[in-house]
Amino acid sequence: MENTPLSNLTKPVRCIVKLGGAAITWKHELEKVNEENLKIVSQELRQAFITSSPSQKVPGMDWSKQPGYSEVSCDPNDFKDISLDSSSFVVVHGAGSFGHFQASKSGVHKGGLNQPVVKAGFVATRISVTSLNLEIVRVLAREGIPSVGMSPFSCGWSTSERNIASADLSMVAKAVDSGFVPVLHGDAVFDEIQGCTILSGDVIIRHLAAFLKPEYVVFLTDVLGVYDRPPTEPNAVLLREIAVNEDESWSIINPRPQDMNKQVEITVAAHDTTGGMATKIAEAAMIAKLGIDVYIVKAASSHSLRALRGEIRGSSIPNDWDGTVLRFVGKEIGTT
Image (cartoon, rainbow, N blue to C red; front, side):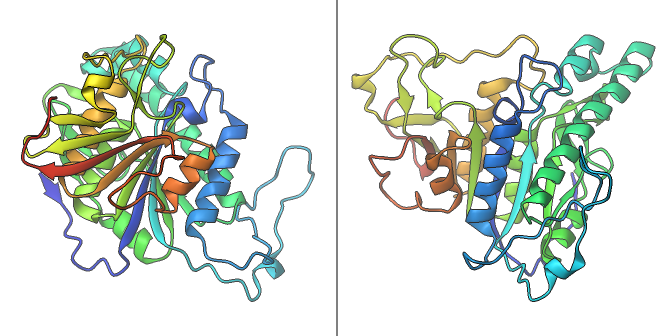
Protein backbone atom coordinates (compact mmCIF):
# COMPACT_ATOMS: atom_id res chain seq x y z
CA MET A 1 0.00 0.00 0.00
CA GLU A 2 1.29 3.43 -0.91
CA ASN A 3 1.18 6.13 1.71
CA THR A 4 2.86 9.47 2.05
CA PRO A 5 5.06 9.67 5.18
CA LEU A 6 3.60 12.04 7.77
CA SER A 7 6.74 12.52 9.85
CA ASN A 8 6.72 16.23 9.01
CA LEU A 9 3.19 16.76 10.32
CA THR A 10 3.84 19.54 12.85
CA LYS A 11 0.30 20.01 14.21
CA PRO A 12 -1.01 16.96 16.08
CA VAL A 13 -4.58 16.01 15.21
CA ARG A 14 -6.88 16.17 18.19
CA CYS A 15 -9.91 14.41 16.72
CA ILE A 16 -11.34 12.81 13.60
CA VAL A 17 -15.10 13.33 13.34
CA LYS A 18 -17.44 11.14 11.28
CA LEU A 19 -20.70 12.78 10.28
CA GLY A 20 -23.02 9.86 9.69
CA GLY A 21 -25.08 10.09 6.54
CA ALA A 22 -28.30 9.30 8.40
CA ALA A 23 -27.60 12.14 10.85
CA ILE A 24 -27.01 14.92 8.32
CA THR A 25 -29.41 13.90 5.55
CA TRP A 26 -32.95 12.57 5.41
CA LYS A 27 -31.86 9.09 4.42
CA HIS A 28 -35.21 8.03 2.94
CA GLU A 29 -35.67 11.21 0.88
CA LEU A 30 -33.41 11.32 -2.17
CA GLU A 31 -30.64 13.93 -1.89
CA LYS A 32 -32.20 15.92 0.93
CA VAL A 33 -29.97 17.46 3.61
CA ASN A 34 -31.11 17.59 7.24
CA GLU A 35 -30.36 21.30 7.45
CA GLU A 36 -31.25 21.69 11.13
CA ASN A 37 -28.99 18.85 12.28
CA LEU A 38 -26.14 19.93 10.02
CA LYS A 39 -26.27 23.49 11.35
CA ILE A 40 -26.26 22.30 14.98
CA VAL A 41 -23.38 19.90 14.29
CA SER A 42 -21.40 22.72 12.67
CA GLN A 43 -22.02 24.94 15.69
CA GLU A 44 -20.87 22.16 18.01
CA LEU A 45 -17.69 21.64 15.99
CA ARG A 46 -16.93 25.36 16.26
CA GLN A 47 -17.58 25.33 20.02
CA ALA A 48 -15.43 22.24 20.51
CA PHE A 49 -12.42 23.12 18.39
CA ILE A 50 -12.29 26.82 17.43
CA THR A 51 -10.71 29.10 20.01
CA SER A 52 -12.41 32.50 20.32
CA SER A 53 -13.73 34.77 23.04
CA PRO A 54 -17.48 34.57 23.76
CA SER A 55 -17.96 38.17 22.61
CA GLN A 56 -16.06 37.72 19.35
CA LYS A 57 -18.15 37.67 16.20
CA VAL A 58 -17.55 34.55 14.14
CA PRO A 59 -16.97 35.67 10.54
CA GLY A 60 -18.39 33.49 7.81
CA MET A 61 -16.17 32.07 5.07
CA ASP A 62 -18.76 31.25 2.42
CA TRP A 63 -18.32 34.26 0.15
CA SER A 64 -20.85 33.20 -2.43
CA LYS A 65 -24.30 34.36 -3.34
CA GLN A 66 -26.90 33.20 -0.86
CA PRO A 67 -30.54 32.39 -1.69
CA GLY A 68 -32.67 35.52 -1.35
CA TYR A 69 -29.75 37.94 -1.69
CA SER A 70 -28.68 39.79 -4.82
CA GLU A 71 -25.02 40.25 -3.86
CA VAL A 72 -22.15 38.08 -2.72
CA SER A 73 -21.82 38.03 1.07
CA CYS A 74 -18.30 39.21 1.88
CA ASP A 75 -16.85 41.74 4.31
CA PRO A 76 -13.04 41.52 4.69
CA ASN A 77 -13.26 43.96 7.61
CA ASP A 78 -14.84 41.21 9.68
CA PHE A 79 -11.45 39.49 9.81
CA LYS A 80 -9.52 42.36 11.37
CA ASP A 81 -8.09 41.32 14.75
CA ILE A 82 -9.71 37.88 14.42
CA SER A 83 -7.90 34.82 15.75
CA LEU A 84 -8.47 31.57 13.89
CA ASP A 85 -6.54 29.44 16.37
CA SER A 86 -8.04 25.98 16.59
CA SER A 87 -7.40 22.42 17.61
CA SER A 88 -6.57 20.39 14.53
CA PHE A 89 -9.36 18.09 13.48
CA VAL A 90 -10.53 16.25 10.37
CA VAL A 91 -14.10 15.63 9.21
CA VAL A 92 -15.30 12.64 7.20
CA HIS A 93 -18.95 12.38 6.24
CA GLY A 94 -21.16 9.63 4.95
CA ALA A 95 -23.47 9.91 1.98
CA GLY A 96 -26.88 9.26 3.52
CA SER A 97 -29.47 9.92 0.82
CA PHE A 98 -26.74 11.06 -1.57
CA GLY A 99 -24.86 8.55 -3.73
CA HIS A 100 -26.23 5.29 -2.33
CA PHE A 101 -29.19 5.25 -4.69
CA GLN A 102 -27.02 5.91 -7.75
CA ALA A 103 -24.43 3.34 -6.68
CA SER A 104 -26.89 0.56 -5.89
CA LYS A 105 -28.96 1.09 -9.06
CA SER A 106 -25.89 0.85 -11.29
CA GLY A 107 -23.85 -1.67 -9.29
CA VAL A 108 -20.78 0.58 -8.96
CA HIS A 109 -19.83 -1.14 -5.68
CA LYS A 110 -19.59 -4.47 -7.55
CA GLY A 111 -17.24 -3.14 -10.24
CA GLY A 112 -17.33 -3.63 -13.99
CA LEU A 113 -16.40 -0.30 -15.56
CA ASN A 114 -16.60 -1.91 -19.00
CA GLN A 115 -20.38 -1.85 -18.63
CA PRO A 116 -21.94 1.48 -19.73
CA VAL A 117 -24.42 1.48 -16.85
CA VAL A 118 -21.61 1.10 -14.29
CA LYS A 119 -19.60 3.88 -15.89
CA ALA A 120 -22.67 6.13 -15.89
CA GLY A 121 -23.39 5.18 -12.27
CA PHE A 122 -19.81 6.01 -11.29
CA VAL A 123 -20.26 9.52 -12.72
CA ALA A 124 -23.71 9.91 -11.16
CA THR A 125 -22.52 8.72 -7.74
CA ARG A 126 -19.60 11.16 -7.71
CA ILE A 127 -21.84 14.06 -8.76
CA SER A 128 -24.16 13.23 -5.87
CA VAL A 129 -21.58 12.73 -3.10
CA THR A 130 -19.45 15.73 -4.10
CA SER A 131 -22.54 17.95 -4.12
CA LEU A 132 -23.21 16.90 -0.52
CA ASN A 133 -19.55 17.50 0.35
CA LEU A 134 -19.81 21.05 -1.01
CA GLU A 135 -22.96 21.71 1.01
CA ILE A 136 -21.30 20.48 4.23
CA VAL A 137 -18.17 22.55 3.59
CA ARG A 138 -20.36 25.62 3.02
CA VAL A 139 -22.28 25.14 6.27
CA LEU A 140 -19.03 24.64 8.21
CA ALA A 141 -17.54 27.72 6.55
CA ARG A 142 -20.54 29.82 7.52
CA GLU A 143 -19.75 28.93 11.14
CA GLY A 144 -16.22 30.28 10.75
CA ILE A 145 -14.57 26.87 10.34
CA PRO A 146 -11.82 27.01 7.66
CA SER A 147 -12.96 23.83 5.93
CA VAL A 148 -11.77 22.46 2.58
CA GLY A 149 -13.44 19.62 0.71
CA MET A 150 -11.24 16.69 -0.35
CA SER A 151 -12.52 13.83 -2.51
CA PRO A 152 -10.67 10.50 -2.16
CA PHE A 153 -11.01 9.83 -5.92
CA SER A 154 -9.40 13.16 -6.81
CA CYS A 155 -6.67 12.66 -4.18
CA GLY A 156 -5.64 9.34 -5.72
CA TRP A 157 -7.21 6.89 -3.28
CA SER A 158 -7.87 3.46 -4.77
CA THR A 159 -8.70 -0.04 -3.59
CA SER A 160 -7.89 -3.67 -4.33
CA GLU A 161 -10.86 -5.97 -3.75
CA ARG A 162 -12.42 -3.10 -1.78
CA ASN A 163 -9.43 -2.81 0.59
CA ILE A 164 -7.41 0.41 0.37
CA ALA A 165 -4.48 -0.07 -2.02
CA SER A 166 -3.27 3.51 -2.35
CA ALA A 167 -4.02 6.67 -0.38
CA ASP A 168 -2.04 9.87 -0.80
CA LEU A 169 -2.36 11.66 2.54
CA SER A 170 0.03 14.49 1.69
CA MET A 171 -2.72 17.01 0.94
CA VAL A 172 -4.60 16.11 4.11
CA ALA A 173 -1.42 16.61 6.14
CA LYS A 174 -0.63 19.87 4.35
CA ALA A 175 -4.14 21.18 4.98
CA VAL A 176 -3.97 20.31 8.69
CA ASP A 177 -0.55 21.95 9.06
CA SER A 178 -1.83 25.04 7.27
CA GLY A 179 -4.71 25.43 9.72
CA PHE A 180 -7.48 24.07 7.52
CA VAL A 181 -10.07 21.41 8.36
CA PRO A 182 -10.07 18.70 5.66
CA VAL A 183 -13.57 17.40 4.89
CA LEU A 184 -13.48 13.99 3.18
CA HIS A 185 -16.35 11.74 2.16
CA GLY A 186 -17.28 8.28 1.01
CA ASP A 187 -16.58 8.12 -2.71
CA ALA A 188 -16.58 6.04 -5.89
CA VAL A 189 -12.98 5.03 -6.59
CA PHE A 190 -10.95 2.80 -8.89
CA ASP A 191 -10.36 -0.77 -7.77
CA GLU A 192 -7.34 -2.73 -9.08
CA ILE A 193 -9.25 -6.01 -9.32
CA GLN A 194 -12.88 -5.23 -10.12
CA GLY A 195 -12.41 -1.86 -11.82
CA CYS A 196 -14.28 0.32 -9.33
CA THR A 197 -16.10 0.25 -6.01
CA ILE A 198 -17.45 2.45 -3.23
CA LEU A 199 -14.99 3.49 -0.54
CA SER A 200 -16.95 4.10 2.66
CA GLY A 201 -16.37 6.96 5.07
CA ASP A 202 -15.85 4.47 7.91
CA VAL A 203 -12.96 2.79 6.07
CA ILE A 204 -11.48 6.23 5.32
CA ILE A 205 -11.59 7.15 9.00
CA ARG A 206 -9.84 3.96 10.05
CA HIS A 207 -7.09 4.62 7.52
CA LEU A 208 -6.71 8.26 8.56
CA ALA A 209 -6.62 7.29 12.24
CA ALA A 210 -3.75 4.87 11.65
CA PHE A 211 -1.58 7.60 10.12
CA LEU A 212 -2.75 10.82 11.80
CA LYS A 213 -2.92 9.27 15.31
CA PRO A 214 -5.71 11.51 16.68
CA GLU A 215 -6.34 11.67 20.42
CA TYR A 216 -9.86 10.29 19.89
CA VAL A 217 -12.47 9.63 17.18
CA VAL A 218 -16.16 10.59 17.30
CA PHE A 219 -18.88 8.99 15.16
CA LEU A 220 -21.98 11.21 15.04
CA THR A 221 -25.04 9.12 14.21
CA ASP A 222 -28.84 9.41 14.16
CA VAL A 223 -29.24 7.28 17.32
CA LEU A 224 -27.70 7.44 20.81
CA GLY A 225 -25.05 4.81 20.05
CA VAL A 226 -24.75 1.08 19.44
CA TYR A 227 -27.65 -1.08 20.60
CA ASP A 228 -27.91 -4.82 21.10
CA ARG A 229 -30.51 -4.85 18.30
CA PRO A 230 -32.19 -2.27 16.05
CA PRO A 231 -33.09 0.62 18.41
CA THR A 232 -36.64 0.75 17.03
CA GLU A 233 -37.35 -2.68 18.52
CA PRO A 234 -38.87 -3.00 22.02
CA ASN A 235 -36.38 -3.50 24.87
CA ALA A 236 -33.36 -2.50 22.74
CA VAL A 237 -30.41 -1.88 25.07
CA LEU A 238 -27.77 0.83 24.55
CA LEU A 239 -24.26 -0.64 24.77
CA ARG A 240 -22.41 2.01 26.75
CA GLU A 241 -18.92 0.50 26.79
CA ILE A 242 -17.28 -2.03 24.49
CA ALA A 243 -13.81 -3.46 25.10
CA VAL A 244 -11.77 -4.28 21.99
CA ASN A 245 -9.35 -7.19 22.15
CA GLU A 246 -6.01 -7.75 20.43
CA ASP A 247 -7.64 -9.88 17.72
CA GLU A 248 -10.21 -7.10 17.06
CA SER A 249 -13.00 -9.12 18.66
CA TRP A 250 -15.03 -7.13 21.16
CA SER A 251 -16.73 -7.64 24.49
CA ILE A 252 -19.63 -5.76 26.07
CA ILE A 253 -18.50 -4.28 29.40
CA ASN A 254 -21.41 -1.98 30.23
CA PRO A 255 -24.17 -3.03 30.68
CA ARG A 256 -23.13 -6.42 31.97
CA PRO A 257 -24.03 -9.23 29.53
CA GLN A 258 -26.22 -10.96 32.13
CA ASP A 259 -28.36 -7.80 32.35
CA MET A 260 -29.27 -7.73 28.66
CA ASN A 261 -30.15 -9.75 25.59
CA LYS A 262 -27.47 -12.31 24.80
CA GLN A 263 -27.44 -11.90 21.04
CA VAL A 264 -26.40 -8.63 19.41
CA GLU A 265 -28.32 -8.18 16.17
CA ILE A 266 -27.18 -5.81 13.43
CA THR A 267 -29.25 -4.95 10.38
CA VAL A 268 -28.18 -3.19 7.19
CA ALA A 269 -30.53 -1.10 5.06
CA ALA A 270 -31.13 -2.72 1.68
CA HIS A 271 -29.88 0.34 -0.25
CA ASP A 272 -26.75 0.86 1.86
CA THR A 273 -23.75 -0.17 -0.26
CA THR A 274 -21.16 0.39 2.48
CA GLY A 275 -22.23 -2.04 5.20
CA GLY A 276 -24.18 0.15 7.64
CA MET A 277 -23.76 -0.32 11.39
CA ALA A 278 -21.98 -3.67 11.00
CA THR A 279 -19.17 -1.96 9.10
CA LYS A 280 -19.16 0.92 11.56
CA ILE A 281 -18.56 -1.37 14.55
CA ALA A 282 -15.87 -3.35 12.73
CA GLU A 283 -14.02 -0.21 11.64
CA ALA A 284 -14.43 1.40 15.08
CA ALA A 285 -12.93 -1.73 16.68
CA MET A 286 -9.89 -1.50 14.38
CA ILE A 287 -9.46 2.16 15.37
CA ALA A 288 -9.76 1.32 19.07
CA LYS A 289 -7.11 -1.37 18.65
CA LEU A 290 -4.69 1.45 17.76
CA GLY A 291 -5.16 2.75 21.32
CA ILE A 292 -7.53 5.50 20.17
CA ASP A 293 -10.84 5.79 22.03
CA VAL A 294 -13.91 5.82 19.78
CA TYR A 295 -17.18 7.50 20.75
CA ILE A 296 -20.43 6.72 18.91
CA VAL A 297 -23.07 9.26 19.88
CA LYS A 298 -26.18 11.00 18.61
CA ALA A 299 -25.45 14.07 16.48
CA ALA A 300 -26.73 17.53 17.40
CA SER A 301 -27.16 16.72 21.10
CA SER A 302 -25.53 17.72 24.38
CA HIS A 303 -23.99 14.24 24.44
CA SER A 304 -22.25 14.78 21.10
CA LEU A 305 -20.87 18.16 22.17
CA ARG A 306 -19.33 16.63 25.29
CA ALA A 307 -17.75 13.86 23.21
CA LEU A 308 -16.35 16.35 20.68
CA ARG A 309 -14.83 18.42 23.48
CA GLY A 310 -13.08 15.34 24.86
CA GLU A 311 -14.99 15.46 28.14
CA ILE A 312 -15.75 11.72 28.09
CA ARG A 313 -12.12 10.69 27.94
CA GLY A 314 -10.89 8.81 30.98
CA SER A 315 -11.53 5.55 32.78
CA SER A 316 -15.21 5.96 33.70
CA ILE A 317 -18.21 7.04 31.63
CA PRO A 318 -20.43 9.69 33.29
CA ASN A 319 -23.86 8.34 34.21
CA ASP A 320 -25.53 11.33 32.57
CA TRP A 321 -23.83 10.75 29.19
CA ASP A 322 -25.56 8.59 26.60
CA GLY A 323 -23.44 7.03 23.88
CA THR A 324 -21.12 4.11 23.17
CA VAL A 325 -17.40 4.02 23.93
CA LEU A 326 -15.00 1.53 22.33
CA ARG A 327 -11.61 1.15 24.06
CA PHE A 328 -8.67 -1.17 23.55
CA VAL A 329 -7.97 -3.55 26.43
CA GLY A 330 -5.46 -5.94 24.85
CA LYS A 331 -6.01 -9.52 25.91
CA GLU A 332 -9.44 -11.02 25.47
CA ILE A 333 -11.81 -10.53 28.37
CA GLY A 334 -15.45 -11.30 29.01
CA THR A 335 -17.79 -12.82 26.47
CA THR A 336 -18.05 -11.47 22.93
